[in-house]
Length: 165
Image (cartoon, rainbow, N blue to C red; front, top):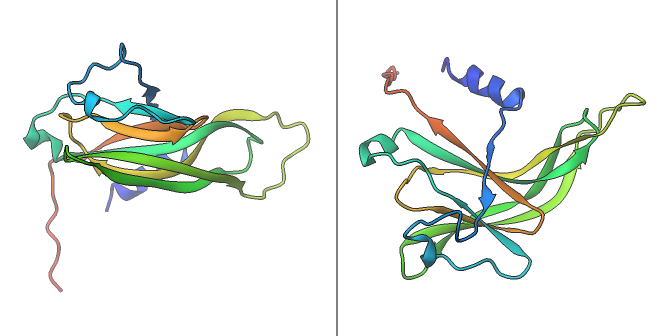
């Protein structure tokens, strides 16, 4: 329980996720990447290749996929984008890929002081926490103009015993 305020504080102050990059054949040379189809018209394929870990180590990690886009904001209101991020099976391989569909942007309605300059920043849409697997690339298809970012979450080896009641 003592870690929840820390996580909430990190989210409140805007911990930045690492941007994933659109993949080109020269950038990523993963042996399983050829199993995933190229992006269709109007879509971009993003690929995340995670740092190698042993199977025993991977249980202590999760990957948060975050889809959104860079937008001009007023710098005062909190903005967010609707949409969905879906896991889909890659037929014949047993792998999973992700498809994101972004909806319209919305924001809180706090009054903006006159003369406040606009702020160009990443506005988050749907996100999903998935298991860490360094043997297979994470592939996400998004519409043009969208970005994929990710965070790697880790757990401490310490566990707590729950009280009986």
